[in-house]
Length: 168
Image 1: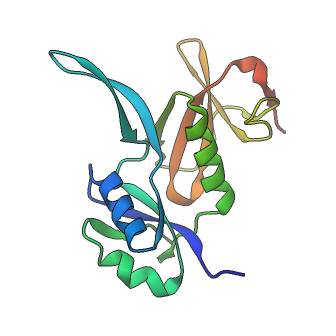
Image 2 (image 1 turned 60 degrees about the horizontal axis):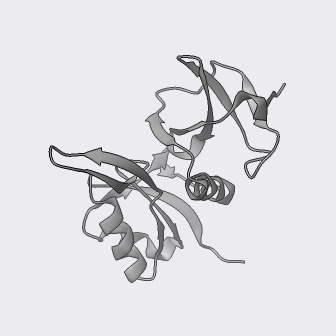
């Protein structure tokens, strides 16, 4: 069994992709979830890929690589929980990759406290079947939020409400 585990690092804003590429070049597995979004300038519109989580890069590393990661230009520090480097579960990374690959409209929002409002739901069909989250109303559209507890972020995905069932 490998001693490599997923963690998140804080990075300089707007440098997530470059830092991810730099870490991968150092043989440290790095993941930056990217979402396509339309940007408009005065003279044109263009589809661009932007990081879903500003200021974060996920790394799968062994403890021996921690110093190398922290010495990488643009890396600020590891995300910590209760004083220790926070561990991200493999399933959270897998679900995040799955959501990004499916191309759903995604947005990330920071959570200031543990999520308690809304109904807990489970997706009943499709590729996301079995994933649980919390429903939020926004102007009659339903969203499911898949909580990545380890880093205090919510991933918001627009889904038709007929795909959801309540979880007790």
